[in-house]
Length: 261
Image 1 (spheres, helix red, strand yellow):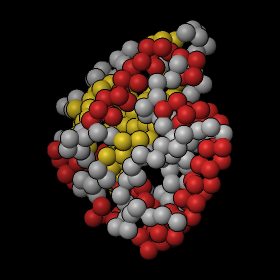
Image 2: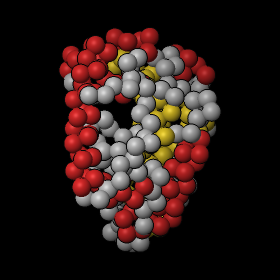
Image 3: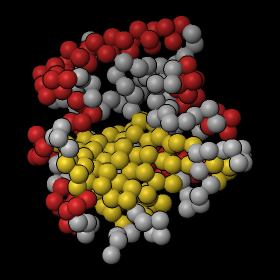
């Protein structure tokens, strides 16, 4: 029998993930590069729900379509350190763009209410709300602020860009992909992609190649360098009339955090 609900938890061992979700071992794909992928796709006839377990910050993803969990064979002690969930915004195959916008904003507001906090990359300026969105429109590699409600016109200019959040050593990236609008420009299919990963995965993402395995030793120099970029950008933006969000709370990743230049 196919499960309706699949529970995930960052750091859980792969065998436990399979067992408690009644998933067979053939759901695992082993790659030569040393990564194991734990995959599950709900049949079209089943309304899937992904349950993200993370204490008080846990949440459910209805209309789930598929889940992929990743395990590094060189770091089996870290368990499943990365999950990707694909889901629809609603049960409908297509919906109006404004309904999609409102449903997506409701999702973000629920996460913020649970205690998830906006995450800003170390080399990017600390901005919030409308000013953060203005900066995102200048540089779309900047995360879209979770605490800003875009207008429908702004929403239509967004596609496959990220909202970044964190809560208690778990990091979350959310994006959506808008489907083909050729048949009806007012309607589209929307796919939401959630990427949930561990503190170690977030830390290693700051580095490349072999440096990733030594991130703890390299952390302070790296973050100092990135924050110098941040403060230079903030000085420039201040001259342009932006207000720096000094109340921003940096996640604690390394024992030495917060690191300053």
